[in-house]
Amino acid sequence: MKMEDIRKMSREDKIKKLTELENELLRIRTLIRSGGAIENPGMVKAVRKDIARLKFALGEEGYKV
Image (cartoon, rainbow, N blue to C red; front, side, top):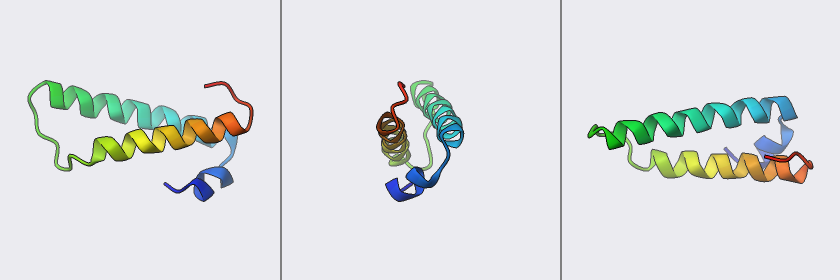
């Protein structure tokens, strides 16, 4: 996700996407810790960056995350 795309989203969409990404990160980390292998190891980094971007954009709007 790019910041310009995130800024175009409504606040409700940002919160919904943030929740989805946090759940996805939790699922990936659980899979890794249980001994499984993920298909794309760079996926963890990408999801973490997207979460950070969403939190930053929500902070810009004055929403406490």
